Amino acid sequence: MLGGLRKRTVISLEPIIGQSHAVRLLTRMLENDRLPHALLFTGIDGIGKQTAAKALAMALNCLRSAGVLACMECRCCKKVISGNHPDIIIVEPSSRFIKIGQIRALRKHLSFAPVEGGRRVIIINDAHCMNVEASNAILKILEEPPDNTHVVLTAHQTSDLLPTIVSRCQHIAFNPVPVAKIVEELANRRDVDEDTATTIAVLAKGSLGRAMSADIEKWMGWRKELLGRVISLSGGSMHTLFGFAEEVSKDKDKLQDTLDMFIMWFRDILICKFHPEKILNNDYAPRIERISKEFSVDELLNRITAIFATQRAVLKNANRRLALEVLLLNLYLSS
Image 1 (tube, rainbow, N blue to C red):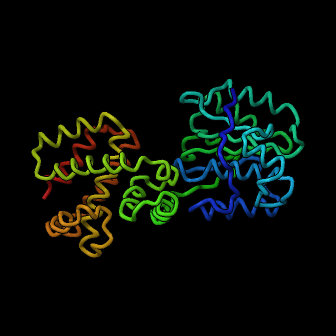
Image 2: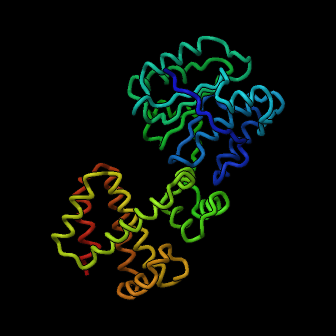
Image 3: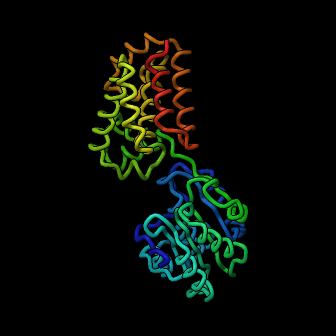
């Protein structure tokens, strides 16, 4: 199966939040009618890659508008919005992977001319989930693209794909959405107070989609629990630290969340020395102010640097437990 179209409202490129560079590039391509046959959108989930791909497909097929802004009202636009346009095909992972059968079905579909007679757009979401066979099959499509057909791949990063696939695509990077933008959207669209919105925005790690769909009460509870554990490690014995490392390192996602919390905590302790009004964890302000007096700037910078180094090591498949044990010793037992 190819994977169904997602039935959600599609917007034009113009209001995609926090992606001015990507929108500017796509706008220029559309205005100059120089859209490549293959595009690769990279970035974390929830920052507008898939929205931009569908907006692009709509702009290319709108019957009333020539350019960037689709009318949202013509027959073709309505079909895209409802998920029923025959020439807008979305391929998504089946279970965890995009498999060769899906790409074979796509190639068979591409052997026919576009049904509506306009531009056909193939959107391959999470292309990094393609297995080896699917990757090689999509490469053949990119090498010999059918007429009036554009392929848009979305992925986390270029290194997740075959270099030969990346080289045949125009790469456009989508950046994490700034915290201030996410806070603004949470306040406007979900009526969240500023302190809570700031915390959610930081926890979302630049993903507007994650922030907007977050169970705020659950997220705030999780953050309080995890931050409490991070704080409790101070003054703990080596046995306590190693026990924590053993528990957390079993789950890679949990480990990354914990490292993010370490960064947030020590960042607040450092910021408090200069701009206490800018700390993120305002409900811990008295404790943060007290701890900030116990460390020098260099000591805090060294700790933050060590956390970032551990994150990089984990991403490169270092031994997670050992990496976290070394970090905890540096954070809590070093002078």
